[in-house]
Image (cartoon, rainbow, N blue to C red):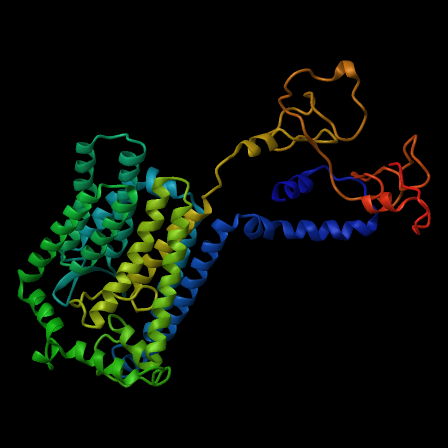
Length: 519
């Protein structure tokens, strides 16, 4: 049906009465919508629309929660101008920038980012990661150097390095597993250089949370690429051992593990923030105390608008609100992996799956830390927590997924190649068809003499005609009978005569006269 409508809309216009022109105008007005949404197969458009809708809902919900969780802190701060909407305004600016970047990424073919520009993006990322170690650019906060000061704003390069690592890993995996363009030794060397160096620079900041999220995402991508499960288990075991070693080597990391196991061992020190988060969840109950009615945000819960915004959601909206947030991310994961499933190549599948996995894993890291299941990592909730670099990088990840969806196509079949040889009755060529003068089969028009008919297999045969009918009747064909409807050609549509019921009913009054039509 979609192919037929395409050929009808592209056929040469025939003269029609004025009463038909308004209908044609409405049809041409719908063409852009049909091309954008209705003309795309359901397997591509459905997850794309669901993904965009969920991201918009989560982002708007994040604006609401950022304002609710930060309004008291900014209102009582003279440094912030006593403006209760200070953090909301900044979040809106960063979200607008992230949306612009996401639209730009989605409008381009993902091969541009994952193939042709991947080396340039990698060098740019390495430069930003090295820049934070310079004293003129680095900003120390909470014992780590993770930000670059740019005027009144700060930029966290590790958030954007996540996208770079996904693109590089997808490119290397496709070249090794799918294209088989490199041997195993070269594959390992490239992984060590193009994936290992960014991870080491992120770890040296130190930013163990981002390193853990990227490593878990790479394991998911390796599994989807077809890596041997034994190698995956080995890498996973080595990673767990490495995380334990890094977590126990310094006092700061050891204190986080002790806080996770027993936060009440130091209720006014290292365990204070986690305990206040527990109070927030306990106060919320099933349906919460009401939106904007949190008590923990009154300077009881540190970083309520960032790391612990999920606790504020639990207090104001209760268990129902927290489960709703988790459900929204579950729908996002379904849409992202659905897009990855129908991607045209391995590079697209790994990019879509990697970006989706990174968002979901970062959510789980934050939620598990706030609930005391894992040590606190300082990672915000994607789309919901305050953070300029986080909201921008998450929206760019979504733009990358949408780019994969936009450039996913159905595989060409033998029927598609056959339709490319169809021609219109008035001589206009269909897309990809042979020249109009080539021999073929005509369903309408002047009969072809026997001597001019092609012999043997015909390369391009079927010719298309425009649908519709004219208000004026054409002359009846010679030899037609007066009793039934005559076969006629009205404006491009062939009338095959009376229906089967009319032929069985006969040409009389239809009351059993015994005579049947002979058509």
